Amino acid sequence: GRTPIERLLLCDPVLHRPPAPGETMAHRGSGLAEATRKRRDRFPSFAAAYDHCRTRGLFADFTPEALALYVGEGMVETADGSEITLKCDREIEAAVFEGNHSSLCARDVEAVQARTLFVHARRGNFEAATYEAIASRMTDARVESRDLGHLFPLEQPGAALELVDELLRDD
Image (tube, rainbow, N blue to C red; front, side):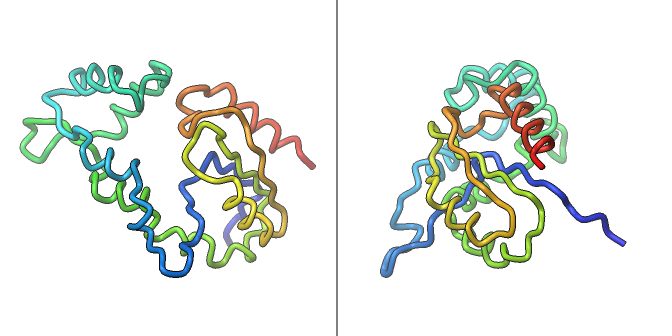
């Protein structure tokens, strides 16, 4: 049989509030999606990709180790081996940011038995109220807002590890 998941730490997950009547996710004009579509996604080498990324605002606060892992694990050689490209197509990432499928994530949350901690990053782009609405439907979930950025596990891994420890100790 399967081993059940006992605890979930959700670090500022990409979840949007449901659209209001007459509003579509496209009406929100997600700046993250637009920026993602414009982001450079091909480089001549892994070293060039690392050098480019470390000068970009999105990656500015990543630890050097986190950025190296992002480049090393998040990119791959093209089929002909001439370039390095992102493993996740920009259009797919943009669709995630636009929230086109967010409602599916919350569809069956009542069935989740794991002790769950949603971490809302105050300096992120998502609303704590959305997390609170989902957590309220779960058996054992709570939301904490922290003074962190959306990508804090890559920027402040110590903060992420403290949250893991907290969740593991929380009985």
